[in-house]
Length: 444
Image 1 (tube, one colour):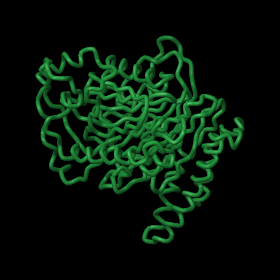
Image 2 (cartoon, one colour; image 1 turned 120 degrees about the horizontal axis):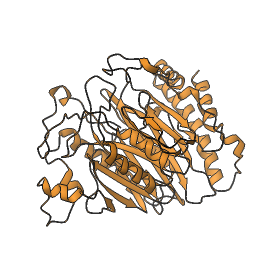
Image 3 (cartoon, helix red, strand yellow; image 1 turned 135 degrees about the vertical axis):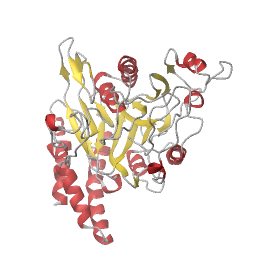
Image 4 (cartoon, helix red, strand yellow; image 1 turned 180 degrees about the vertical axis):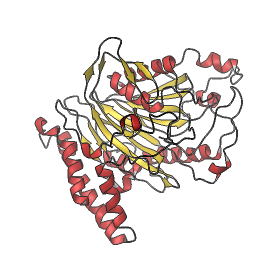
C-alpha cells in the first residue's frame, strides 16, 4: 500500500526536505480502503474493500494460514525483526507482496478484516529495522478476534517494537508510517499513527474511506497516552485550542503528491455517498475498478497490484465471504470468493515461489538482486492480456468472460445470504481453489 512519495529521516519538529527531483515528474498514486456499515448498505452486512497500489512489477500472492498453537516464549520472525509469538493464532487469509512476511490486507476466521495505507507526518520515519505496517496487519489478524482486539494488538506491538524499515523491494530505502482500517461484523475502526503515537476513531454506522493522509480530527475514541502532551512539547499544539489530530500531526507544507492523494480520498468519499443506503458488494467492486478517480491506479511505475472485498453479515449464522484477485488491475481481474471452514484447500496457483536463504529480501545487504516471484495465476493472467494487446474486440471479449465468471460467484453468494440456497459446508473448503483453477483454464 504504497504511494509515490519518498522522504528520508528529518529532525523532530522540522519540515521534511523537498521531494527528490527524480520523483518530481511521477504522477501521484496511493491506496484506498473502504468500509460500509448499515444503514449505508442495502442489507444487514458490513462490506470492506481495498486496492493495494504498489510498484508495477511487484507480485501479490494470496496465502492461507491455519490457526496454530505455540509454546510460551516462542518467537516469530516478521519481515525484518523477531517478536514474541502469541500462544495461539487465528486462521488468516492474506493478500501480500510476495517478498513480505506481513500483508497489505486480509481477513481472519472471526470476520475481522484489516488494510493499511502509507502516511507521512511531523514524526520522523526510521530506516532501522522494525515492524512494517504490513507486519502489523498480519499480527492484528492473527491475534485479534474482533476489530477492537486487533487494534489493541497493533498499538501494543507499536509501543514494544516500533515501526520502520524499507517498504519496497529496492536498494534505496522507502519508509513510511501507517494508517489502518479495521472492521468486523458489527463495527469498524480507523487507526492512524505517527511514529509510536496514534489516534483511533470508532465507526458504528455509515460509510468511511481512508487514503494517504490523516483523516481523524476531533472525533477520537482512543489514543496514545502521551499523544497530546507530546504535541505540546513539540510546539504543534498550544493545549488551548480543541485538539484536532490531523491538523496537529500532519505536515504543514504537504508535498504535491500528498495533496493529490487528497483528491482520491475525496473521490472515494463521494462515490460512497452516491450509493448511501444502497451499498452492495457490487458497489465496492465498481469503486475499486473506477479508473477516472484514480482509485483503480495505473500510472507510471505503479499500479493496483491486488484487491480485496469482504462481505460480513451481521447475522452470525451466515458466513463471512472474502473476495481476492491475486492479480493486478481489478478492472481486468476476477474477484474470487473464500470462506473460512475447518478444512481449507490451499491454492498453490496463487502462491509465489520460495527462495529461502537466497531471497534478496533476506540477504544482507538486501535487494541487491531480483528474482521472478510470479505465481501461476499471475503468469496466465499476464499472458492472456498481453496476447490481446492492440485488439479492443479481443480485450472486451476476455473481460466479458471474466466478469461472467465473477458474476456467477456473486449471484451464488447472494442466494445464500437471502436464503435461496443452502450451503454445503464440505464443499466450501475447495471454493477459492476451484475458482482460481477455473480462471486459469479460461486463460488457457
